[in-house]
Image (cartoon, rainbow, N blue to C red; front, side):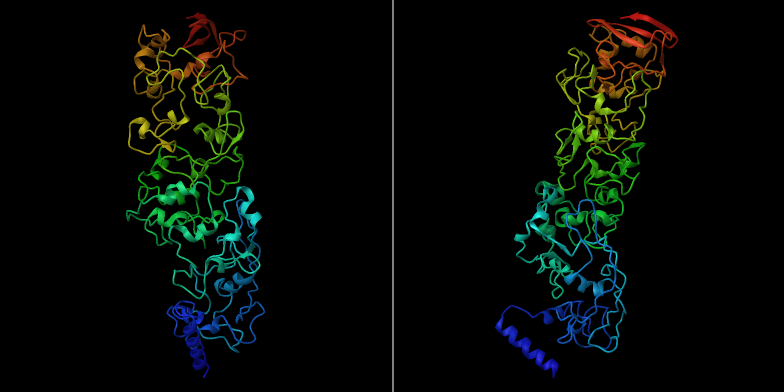
Length: 562
């Protein structure tokens, strides 16, 4: 009798609303039909009614929706992160109803309107992707008030909730719930989603990331070449653009909890595609070289909300690349940095500003590799444009006469940190590898060889980094305008460039134009003082003239004039 009445009602509904289907009819063909007629493997072995596993016409739970299950008594661990705008507390509303099955704590056959537990093929929700457990810290947050002020907090990147009038909706109290993304009665879009998530259309209904419209992660048509591991095990998209947000993020049971990343390690998420199996260049292999930015050295230390000046030493891909903004033409787009003056810059306008986040004022920096008469570990101070001398990274250099420069370089040129610190097999070294300071065979992350060991026999190879910009013929030749005794020092006496020259620069608070022009800052492991009363120094005595006061290779210069 009940089924006959229900069928008659369904027929009337279908007749009154052509093209529509009542919820009970739609759910019948989905895994939410836990009755004996259900299509899934998890279902009842005795109960033939479809809706009863969630709803009861009488004496339902006070939770609403004529709910036929008791409320979970669990205490949940909600999602939290430094960048979360909503304050997710204990689940409520529709989300709590969903969890009465999906947290796995209550038997699937335990119904309020049944005196005994209904027999099921699986007593509780089986372990797997649909069993969320009580730890929701690895799931998209729910049960928080999505307000207009929340949408604009901390720079926005969430749409105004007033626009959520389509398939994605908030509940009656203006909260984000499971039902904002999932329709429990309709699985037409897969995973009970309220809309197809191709190209992350569902995600983009609420999220509006800055620069996303021009990002490669939105636009790239790159596909997986089929070589294991699968970069997209939880998605159905076949291109980077089709997966969009889910290239990196997983809305439920994410291994990288804080930002719902697809892997437990930050770099692992990037390497899923940047291992040569999706992206053109194999970035992962770069980090196995002798000198690297050690992205695998720490896990969970990096935080998008951390200060521009890194306070806890680490490096992750996201310190230099913004995955929501990066593209082949702008790999450093949308990244924060620190200016030459020490102020935060957001977004950066120069490569060196990113480098200064770690290599400037941050604590925990390693000691300089070369012991100098003037020691300085703060790279930002070394490149200051008020310094007595510096390589022209943050501004045009001080020296108006550098005859060794190889065109098109001139004394009005500037260079980047990446001009020296880069992949030894990248385009700057005439190779085909990826660009950037990810890894190199030459330490410290140098694009070309730069030997600093004393008594090194000069060659184009051992000082290749210097000879990239400075003509070897000019440096060690004669009559070309460069320092005439370069040949004697570098070739005859086998003194490396590094013994006399500090490649970054000399801070204006430590050096002066008289003693530290032309990047002169001696290596004290090779150069020593003449006596306790005559300190190591070079002194400018005129245009292209100077004197050294020191002992080098056992020879006293007290002074040696040039």
